[in-house]
Amino acid sequence: MARSLPSSALTHKTPSTSSSVYVMYPIWAINRATAPRPPPHSSTRTKHHYSCTAHSPDPHSTRRGMGTLPSLAVLLSFLALAVGGGAADVEYDATTDLATSGAGAGDVWNSSEATKYWGPWTPARATWYGQPEGAGPDDNGGACGFKHVNRYPFMSMGSCGNQPLFKDGKGCGSCYKIRCRKDRSCSGRTETVIITDMNYYPVAPFHFDLSGTAFGRLAKPGLNDKLRHSGIIDIEFTRVPCEFPGLKIGFHVEEYSNPVYFAVLVEYEDGDGDVVQVDLMESRGPGGGRWTRMRESWGSIWRLDSNHRLQAPFSIRIRNESGKTLVANKVIPANWRPNTFYRSFVQYS
Image (cartoon, rainbow, N blue to C red):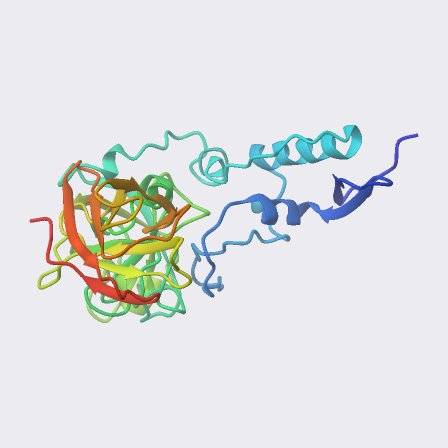
């Protein structure tokens, strides 16, 4: 006899030696549990602006509930587990929502216009989040892993990008010129912003969720707050080379790194500003003298899970979106420590 289930819940059958155990999940918790997400920070939505960093879906929002195809797929998969007792793994690609739900549904989501330098001005929409004069995230971080985006060289001019801009983290650090000309409070001046965060709920095919500082910079003198109160505005953008005067490419060894797990944040790359592949070379030991591919962990953070104790110093090789490669020779010293920044002597120029 089939068990009746509450309409507001799904079940997941877990293995048991004696009997089937059914764990009850609210429907919104299924999305929360299955959607991949970077470490959260504390940005929130308010009535006058939009937040790109709501990493956990809102259970009370119909837009983020069961009205999307991926969510329906998750529902059917879990029902199959509950009724049939199958053991198949369920995979959920959160990026699918970007193409099938919300404003702009049905549009073609590709990143070609966000790749070439000084291309034609492309239409987009902009919102803002965080404090009116802030850098966006309350912790001055973001889904790219950058620290202190309120300081040089970011100077609070960061932006969340939706998938064609964020590119699963491979768009982190990219630079764009943006301008707004339609709103009466817009100045029409161009400003440069850097992708530092991820926009999970876009309102257009290209959506820049700007820091409060960056959004206000688009306004005419004295009309910063008035423009921010517009909420969502039409803008135009074009990609430009990044320029970080006085800086070489930096490597921040992440917390919890140890002799068999090494994670590093790559930042301050001139030109593309982004990284699409990172490799590490040990100085000696089993991996000495050869390059080992690192895996993208999240944002601009790359990691290496090793089956042996890694032998420093480490050389790091990076490749940007244009295919240009740089090697920072022995940039990570033998006595490296977690949560420490190491500056190289190399830069794209």
